[in-house]
Image 1 (tube, rainbow, N blue to C red):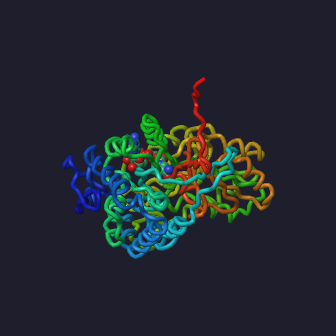
Image 2: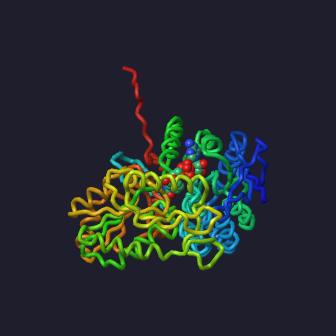
Image 3: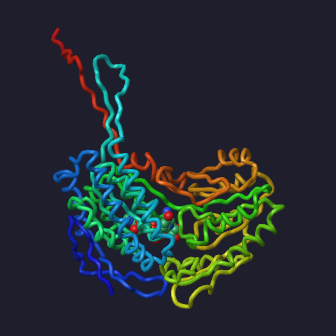
Length: 490
Ligand code: TXE
């Protein structure tokens, strides 16, 4: 078994508790590594190191171009080690190699190059002022130390979307990956040994949300928190951060609708919808799991959907023929099976049952599709975060929009129609941070991602993504200083 340490101040440390947590390989259902069970003392050390790097060390004074050079080095090192990092992520959370390794040499590392380029182009402004003889400029400043709390579904992807803009903005960071999949993040710190980082710039503590995570959020040395995870975790972090009036950015998942209008290209829609949920077993925040289909198309759509989804080869991620890998961890696997069981018990019609599919060992569930569920039932309202879709018919576009907007979430939505004008009109009415028309699942570094409603607030990617890691400072300079006596003697 591989035993990891946690990373702070440029060094590896054993947890003060002397305890480690097992990390499982979900393809086999067995532990393969141990990660430190960090607590307050370890978090204190990590935050202290980040603080020192920013306030006393080189980072707080680093020039913009220097930050850019460092980000480019990080991108180069990740790209050069993509194979190794991808292999660890596959082993630790079951992600298929084709879903991780190529991204580490393309759009995920591009994130570092994109923000590297932005470092020395991020301009403040000179503000028009009504006040006479005053120069008033606005500067963008880093927070200092930011906490980056990440989820298990795409540990490196979720981290990179935070790390690149946080560093570009000039912050030092403490990362807390999920207790279910911390290995690739720790391994990243190992490979970044080649990037010549200042000590304390990036620190990683591992362990549970309620211990390491809470200690990090409530640490007075942390000035801002960026979080990706579920609503309960997000709510608890926001409450904790509010006690110190600490800003939080959060990305909390969704129950994203896919609206198939009567004039949709059916093959395009079915392929797009299947690709938008099942290859990653629904373990993506933007998975489109609520399929709203025009009634005249309903029967044909369901048949095609089942036909395409049932062709998927479910198996070990190490097998190049595999198209769908395991669920990332045991607790989540059991939760998905429980969710499916409850829908069946409540009378939901199973068009495709993914239970019992795939290898006997490990946590496999194939594509699962329900109909006969009304829109106010739990399956249509709550995120399963698994390979489970529900198909619901609609009779009018107004009804489709009302249903699409009828959950607490607002992360993403898909619209499938040959009538682009109609689709655009509908997109305007959808309450979501991202709307796809005749495509799904696209994301680039340039395009801000984030939620409306309970899917979160703040944005990742794009210029917005960098602004979230900065605060403004308005500086006033008197060009003709004169200050009348405020209390002239009579
Ligand atoms: O996430 P958690 P979980 C959704 C999905 C899933 C549900 C729960 O529906 O079924 O969330 O997943 C840390 N203070 N998404 O339980 O608990 C935790 O240790 C500080 C959507 O795995 O939200 C981990 O590092 N930290 C999603 C991280 O938060 C806390 C991706 C996420 O854990 C904390 C994953 C606390 N009080 C799940 N509570 C997406 N948006 O893509 C938890 N953590």
